Structures are given as structure tokens and as C-alpha cells.
Length: 410
Image 1 (spheres, rainbow, N blue to C red):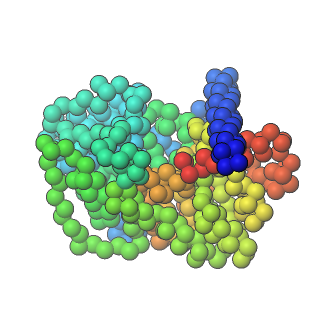
Image 2 (image 1 turned 30 degrees about the horizontal axis):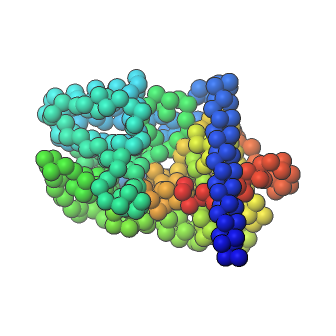
Image 3 (image 1 turned 180 degrees about the horizontal axis):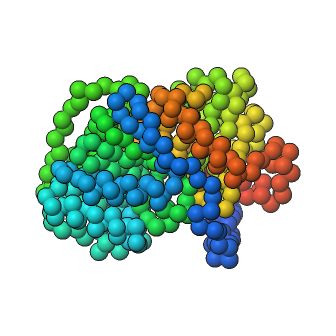
């Protein structure tokens, strides 16, 4: 009897795995052909112009369109006098990527110290020759695999951060990778800091560099800071030390909400506690709005996200699906006072897996501009009602149920 039970269980598990594999293959194949058959208008989604806000001696500029951001990032590199720190999850070998590479080389040629970090796995499709820089530039390739137990998060988490600082005076951080498509086709959000709070980004880069540099690469010195600005703080996930403060930052902010939460996410796969916190806020009268792409560049992430829609909609959370373009931003505001912009998605990979960085800003001016950007984005999104969601086809419900066990992987 015991053997029969074990045999039945094995067959059920194998059948479930086969069904999941077939579902993934069909969804990925269908998405591939959809992308080939359909072409979205590039850069046609509504835009919000950059705006500068002063926060206790630091100027904060918010960007929501890649061309605006990349122009200012390149200007900053070209104006560098002493040191450039550049870290990006993805750097494409295309027109925009080559402009950044040229600007970094030109800076090094005039005597600027230039340090570059990029993620090896995220750039597997980019020729390795593109990342060959002159010897005057220090380059750290975060490896595809690290020595040690490969299944441990501390060994397998990706470097998902996007940071640029110049001379310790100007810094950029946010969701934008570097490439031509991101300049016009994707909707994302980035911040520029000018002033003493740039130290937050410098310090994040230095810590990562020193922890992962090669034996022949120089260590970077910590300068410390005299300026403590509690209204701008960097939260950093550090998997190698099992430090994940970004998730706690979100939960704490949502718990404090009394009026409204405006949340934009590229890949929204919340865990149970995050979902319950958003629903609890909605039930105590907070307006909770979550904006995410109708179709992202990762179709399986979309379907795993759908598994939480019923709970959120029944709990009073309002969901908005961005149309005809990929929204890649990772931002939130609470009550027009608190904001965050950064690299972390609300999913397992970002909140308990990858190296990530988010800025927390306690400033009504920054929050106001981000709220205006959210309203603009919502004009290009369609809402989902509970009735509409419950009436979705049976095959969609079956796919969601089959894929739900894969949630811990993303």
C-alpha cells in the first residue's frame, strides 16, 4: 500500500510538472509571436517633464522619460573632474550604450578615475568585447555564477542596481537600464541628486565594489559624511549578508498610510504579508492604487502576478494596467509625504534575492511630482473591476492555478 501511495504521488507530481512546463511553453511562445506581429508606437505614452525639488540642501530631480535622463547623465560624465562611479544591471551594445561607453573612456583619457560595474548574467546577450575598456578604467563584472553553493540567495542574487555618481556631487539612481529601447519605448522613473545626499549613492557603490572586486583591483576608501539628512536615505539589499531592508521600508510606509497609496511596479508579485498590508490599508479607508503593465517583457511574471488580483480586488485595492508600453518604474508615494524610487520590484527576487537600492524621501514636493506622474500614467491605463476579473475565461484561471507554485522562484 505504501508503495502504491508513493507511486501515485510521484505520478501526480510528474504530471503537475509536465502541465506547468507545457503552460510556460505555450505562454512564452504565444507572447513571442504577439511581439513579432504587433508593433507599439515608440514613445507615444504620456510623459511628465522632469522637475527639481530642494530637500534640505540636496536638489532632487525626477525623470520619467529616458531621453531626458540619459542626456543629463551623459552631461554629468562629460563634466567629471575627479571620479565617476557607474553601475548598471544592463548596458546594451547599441547607440545609447556606446555613447555611455565613449563618455566614460573620454573621462578616463582626461585623468578622471572611472569605475564600472555590470551584471554578467543580465548581459549574456551582449558581446563580451563591448565591455573591454582601456586599462585606465576599472571594470567589475558581477559573475554569472559565484563560487560556493549556487542555490543560496547569497550566492545567486543578481546585481540589479543602477547607480551613477560624479565627483561626489551629482548622482543618479532608479529603474532605468542603459540602452536605446529604454530611452523612448519604456516608461520608467529615475532620480538625480545634487548635493550632500549624493554620499548615499557613493557609499553604496564603494561597499559593493570593495566586497566584490578582484584581487588586483584597488580598494575604494570610505570618506564618511558630516551631513545627516534623515529626509533622504538609501536602503540597500545585501544578499551576502542576508540584509533586506527594502521590504520592511515598504511595509512600514504602508502601515502608516491614512489617505492614499500610489504604487507603480514593473513586476508585481507580492508575498502574503505585503498583500495583507495593502488590503488592510484599503479596508481602513485608504485609497490604494497599484499601476503595472498590461503586458511586461516577462510573460510568466505577468501570470504569477495575476494570481494575487482576486485577493487585492476583493480587499478594495484598485488595479490599473498600463497600455501599449512597458512600465518598468519601481515607485510609491504615501499620503503625499513619503516616496520611494529605486531598483527593487515587489517580488521575491528583488525583496529577498538581488542586490537592490531604493531611496526613501520624506518630502511633500517630491511626493507631489510623483503623484502627478502617477495620474498622468493612469490616463494611459485601464482599470480592472472585480466583476470583470471574476468573469475571465476558465482557461486563464486554470493557467494561473497551475503556475502558482512557481511564485517562490520569482
